[in-house]
Length: 129
Image (cartoon, helix red, strand yellow):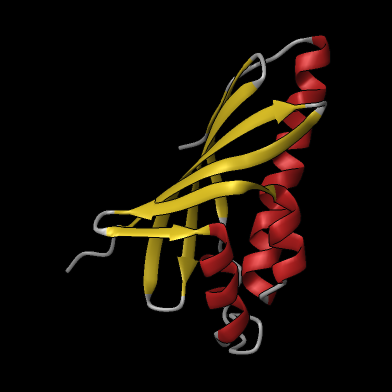
């Protein structure tokens, strides 16, 4: 099920900008493109999962050091599940199957100085254990 908020006028261009960021996020994860990922995150973003906290710098280092899904010929299966935009803030819910994990990510975004960026990432593996 995909929930997308209907937005008029200028908000639609914001919505499209957020979608572009999410597709860049998917591409960056799949190819291990640290520069692309760095460009869509705010410098003080944190990545949080139950029991885990990582700075953006640490996470980008981890991404750079791992084998990429592209190198493993894994299928591309990322999905946007929901996007909610309220003025200059947004929340995106996305499905990110990576390696042996089945992540649901909640990405918090803010529009500052005319630019949307991810300011917070919360994620959890939803595999049946």
